[in-house]
Length: 261
Image (tube, rainbow, N blue to C red):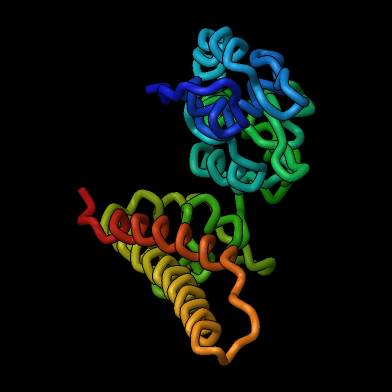
């Protein structure tokens, strides 16, 4: 629901909240001419203009959805799982050049794509692009490509390939039927899902520990200043960032530790 705030002018964050948009949606709405730019000092929106934008905000949601756009690498991974081929970033670029896929915006100078646009792509079109790139190697895939198709970490695939005795050719490539057989193994899928959850949780806990160390170090520096052992108080910026990170990461851990349904 849109955030109800009474104010005379709105910054970018308040503008998004008032229209019920997440932070990326106003930027895309502005780029595509659906939302107007700020009318106060080139940085803020007047209350009158914001009120006029309510329907336009709904148009942004209808046109671009709620899922955050993704870059070429994640787009390739998403398509690889659908077509059972090792889609690469360059294939995404070819699909754009062919007009099959639209660049919705950019992030840090790199193009991004709507996930629903990726999911609507004709799979035969994607396969044709990948086959054109791979040529006679179409029916085989290297270890990295196999991991991409399966959605596994590379080291997980290497371990499973060894355990299952998968045979690679002289180029170190595996046949696509062998990779598909792994994907169809329900017991293996559950095993890998559990392993990925453990690895993800371990990584998140390392992030939590780092944020905790930053907070503890700040408290020590603050105590040193209070006790007269330091000439200047510590900058509060690192503390604020660490506390925000700590709150977010602990919420993430809670979700990762929840039993899988």
